[in-house]
Image (tube, rainbow, N blue to C red; front, side, top):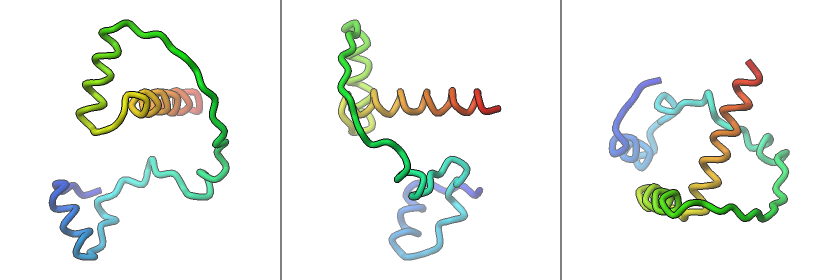
Length: 88
């Protein structure tokens, strides 16, 4: 896989150029696989120390998402990593 800057990538995309050589498909999820995922949600309450909440808020702000979104993303990433380890 070739690498380029985000700006170069955006320019190529905006110009309608083929960008597939710059994409890493090894962790891609196919649409038909996404449809199989259970989309039902349940609420949970988790208590965190104040410093954890502050750190979460700082990280969320860096990437422009909510605290809830970053918690969901990080938990999902960790679960995927664990699933890969168990599969190997």
